[in-house]
Image 1 (cartoon, one colour):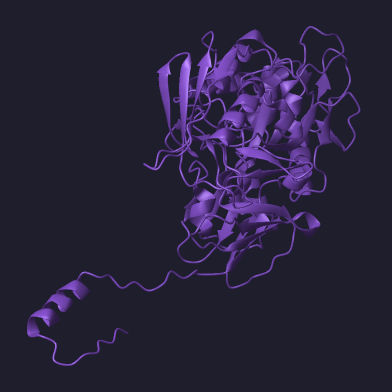
Image 2 (cartoon, helix red, strand yellow; image 1 turned 135 degrees about the horizontal axis):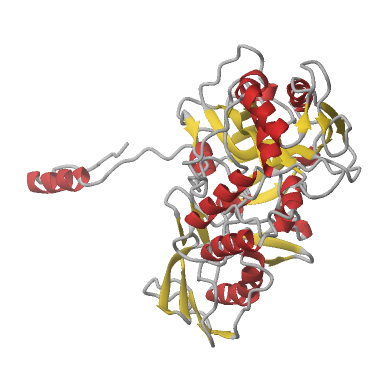
Length: 507
């Protein structure tokens, strides 16, 4: 309330005062919808503890977008790389790159980010990033990083210029995956994100608003899948289809970039005595899997059928390839042609090379995971239709015919060359004879190298997908989905191609 005191004010002065007051906007103070938000059933792995020197990729859904962002990032929604903590990148020539930092950035400690911080970070990280994302064989030319421009009174933001002696084989977005961080304490790190990250008890995590940034934000408490399911006034809950109750309806779905399937052992048709899981045999076995029924029964329809372990929403997924249809008849004919014969309708199928019944042994990668028992039963029953016996083990005996598990590659870049950061099934695939083929290596290195430029070559990944589909080295069952329980403003479907999906969901 504004009180004006005074006697005998002139009419002209009063009119002038009224005009002045009419130009003033009175706004109510900004209020948080909630002081804390509980996120349960988190469908991604938890990053390590930065206070102990464990700093994961900035692509991580929690770290990268809110807590520990990178200077640049891959935006799948826009199909390009773009500045994030940077205001811009100036390509003055193929050997001169200028990085212009955004102004008013702060470390978790609340201290301002300086041009010296930018220079030191680029100096320490640019060659390591090239080796990590493009390949260890990549050459990082000698270079000079000139002293950063510090902010001036005119509001100029910090910047740093990289001058290469020879043109590098990678581009200026080579640090898309590298969190912008600096050493803090004896062995820890701190980042320049909106939130400070800290590990809580029982594998959970907590994101606390970082000092220095003025906008008020809620505390985010994150519980991994399988953790507590506490319904509070302010919550987000991810529930996989295998954990939902029969008859339960999901109004908001999130298609998770993770695919359940079978990674086959590659056979050799010319090896006497071997089961020889050749491409025609692998395709026939895939046609025996009632994947649509399995999706509806085990995941309550949450998910999607796909033709590879590349998630459907990724630009590198080849949409022209069709799901192999379920057909017992076609599978039987293909197996007969491959030398797996069946004399009678109720007799075991016999390998013509050995004269012995065909027995396939499967390694269960995650025996305790939800839906593993159902998947084993479906595979066993499907193979039994054609007289093939299935055996399952949790130990790698060395004679495994297929590995059943979850194929997960770090999102959103989906770069298989980063084998040290992939899931177990992906690491097995990287060691396969298929992946070591010269043409496959060429396609993937071409794609990986393009990720360091403004416009990634997603066509190379689509061609890789086509060759993978032809060989059927991996038989996908379905891409996993999760039911999203959130307040009314949440989207009907969660789009993980949007790099700010979590920020839009919780803020």
